[in-house]
Length: 262
Ligand SMILES: C[S@@+](CC[C@H](N)C(=O)[O-])C[C@H]1O[C@@H](n2cnc3c(N)ncnc32)[C@H](O)[C@@H]1O
Picture 1 (tube, protein in one colour):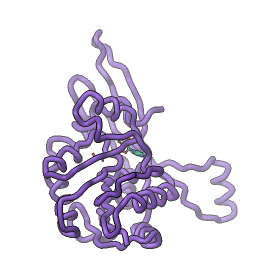
Picture 2: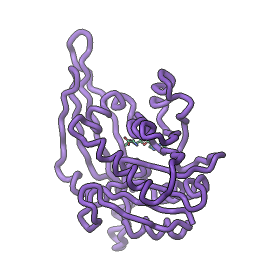
Picture 3: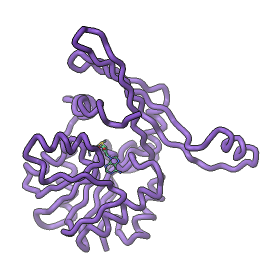
Picture 4: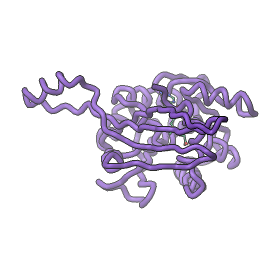
């Protein structure tokens, strides 16, 4: 099954819906950058997708370039003026010739990396692509948030003449026989991740509906483990901020990290 193929068409309406305060998010990113650095900066955004954030940051006079692993994003970019700012690439395996002032990975995009090893690779690639003393900024959906969404969640959206249904379930990497074996020997090992099920009922020209299904997998890890790994890679953690309520606690849903390359 594909990930983010047909759903791209509905992403801005559903995820960045009109009631969603994008201005607030841009203001937060701008504030974080200005609070911890001194002058106008180059930003490289990882996993930009429809570059909804990058476009706003350019309006604030940042010099922004970006990458994403989605070919559909690149196809879209070719249709407009953003083409030379946007690259096809994997955030777990990139290196930039020009060292950046800020590497940004926004809107829980890092959670699309299911394995912890890939989170570490993303931190390392970012470290190698940053100028000394400059910033890596990213946000996560916390485990708390995923566990809560995971309980009986489903949402429906009518967009144009189509209907989109979003559901989430918790999945496990392991085959059931391995799980049984682990249980038998009382070994506790968490190989779970979270899967969005996206069902799109798309209206056809003859008024019939076609069902198209996609999945988007996400994962999250403990904040303490993330902090420790960043420090091990040689970042200083400057700031953690809860997107909704400022202070980070056990029930934070979305947390921004600001880390400085030593
Ligand atoms: C939630 S969306 C992006 C959100 C966007 N940053 C924003 O602020 O609206 C997640 C994006 O991560 C991208 N992605 C997933 N895995 C990736 C990887 N390994 N490298 C680069 N991009 C990736 C997907 O293609 C998708 O565009």
